[in-house]
Length: 491
Image 1 (cartoon, helix red, strand yellow):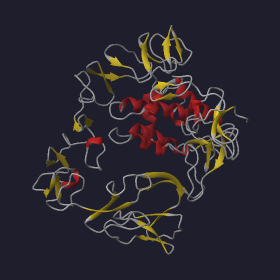
Image 2 (cartoon, rainbow, N blue to C red):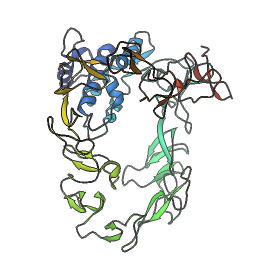
Image 3 (tube, rainbow, N blue to C red):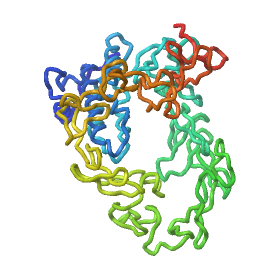
């Protein structure tokens, strides 16, 4: 079924014209909601632009790959499949998708924009149909997933309640969602139905409390707040909540093996107690032992709304100098607020401007810039004029005075390739034992631990998640009840 509603905002039309030039080479912006080819053209340009804008802040390698002709060709295959019914296009969602892609804030996770685009262009193959795992989206219709099996990959029915999600699309049966279910340190993708407090539920449903965040569960057919359990007792969704001076977490002191270990109620550390391996009670700060705040702090959680950032042991209204990323003891700030970037040794700092000295990751460049040598250079668009004073987008190089895509495997090269090595003017596979960076065609076999390995021969054991480990044209397949092994596809 095709949906061709336009649904375009004026900002999308203007932005797409700026990106594409609205020339005869591209469809007019008002056709983006009517044509899957026009949508792909505009959407990939938006992803390419955002990847360049956010390069110094977020690693968007998949978005940057869409700037390259090889990445673009994969999406163009999906768009072309709409005409034959093998893919589905919902143009009513196209405008919101491009809006989200262009408007994403780099300090947040730009991949959140993908939620607005997930249903615009999807697979359309029926259950039991052979499917291509090389598509950039799951090629199967909604509520089906492409999964390897006997003979070759087929479209399989999405998981039922309590079953694993299926395929790249994490497909579940109609009415169910794919949920990340945690149990101690373990996590699994499981199909289930989401319910909130007061709604009717079944034992396979997952109840959530959207209010104060306390754990909920299904009891007597209704989602309710779980009762309070004791210290050291198991806690969590469907189990119970902790008393006031305890928190629910995995305790490595009691359970050395995190796989399958339960979460239990762990007491907060009190005033004067050691906090080297614990968390101080609310209203206290940790400085070897739990101490009164007295205007000091060790995490953002110890600060007030008027001065919410812990900077050098004191609460401050500005986040500049606050700890961030993996170095932050505050779970609520994985990245820095807009205008600041997370620089080593894990502090929010103002980014370096274009033309100024840089030293990543200690002195990172700002948006739409890259540190080349020791200066921040502006990143220009594909095919723009290039030189020593600017940087080309990722997977592009300055050739003939313009930023051109790196040559693909088998193509002529002068220095670098999109995949493989440039040897004697040609892009070739790296030899077994040579270094690789997981780009397409780097190796003839798999890239393991950044080193090219020999491709596996027919009958060799393989992993269902490592299709490239088998020598072409072999694929990693499984016979009913048997192990995964490299074999010729039979469909």
